[in-house]
Image 1 (cartoon, one colour):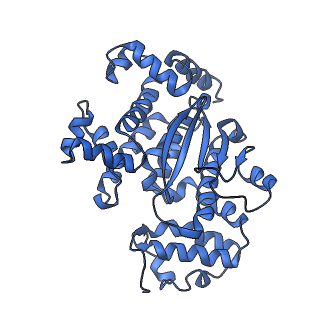
Image 2 (cartoon, helix red, strand yellow; image 1 turned 180 degrees about the vertical axis):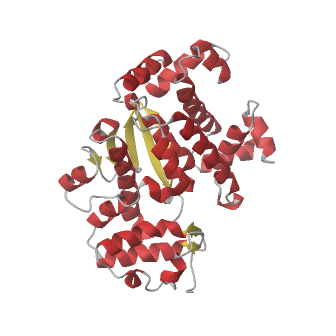
Image 3 (cartoon, one colour; image 1 turned 90 degrees about the horizontal axis):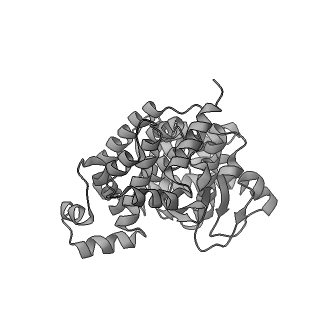
Length: 348
């Protein structure tokens, strides 16, 4: 096996869609393995790992034998929910757009993306920033477009014809690699280039949109499975923010900043500084998780808003209502009404 410059390990299953793509286009898979030290037999066991440098070399070899940038867009369509294992199952069972989006945000580490995702509320949108989890060098534009196209394809599969209603804009930090109209056709109507950060905008009003083939019970069961699989991953592969999410999910009692810092054996100052290095704060992480939990609780029409507020740890219901309105642009009662209305309109 060749000497590696980057020893980060990646699941070998992340290359499977690339191989399927190549085979469909008549590209001999041996050409993809040139310079990697790999052969077809290495891919027979899905439990195998490969080095990051090997995966990137395979992508470079693919680009040599297939036109670009369309290759990135077409390849993104091969990274369906099925390609992402348990994370894909979670996305495929999500009962609402909000559940689907935040499934990816919370558990993106379980998929094959090269990025971590960080959400931010901006006016009437949820802006999701892509931050490199692994260094990809000159391949960054390619893998960025591939992964965003994969996400758009997942939305199109579950909600045909609604991608431009849900995804309002895509912003790339790199310049266009083809005509703008081609980008609009491949992605969404609004595509921006040479932006300070790569991100995509989700309409807040779409978070309550019901997905007809979603299933609340299945979604919750798979979410628990994701949490377990997430916790079993090597600690050294975790971002600190990921470990914070685990504590917040696993603990029954309310976990505050000081409590989690103690569990991590970190001073409060170091805890705050290390989170800042990842571009996130404890408050953002906790608010994101409270928001997701509130979406699930509001779908249970038997629960009063006051009960939900208490469950989420708010001392006053008004504080919860203000926070929820800031997140979604509507009060919780209106969200519940829209969700129930979308269910009623779903055909049997």
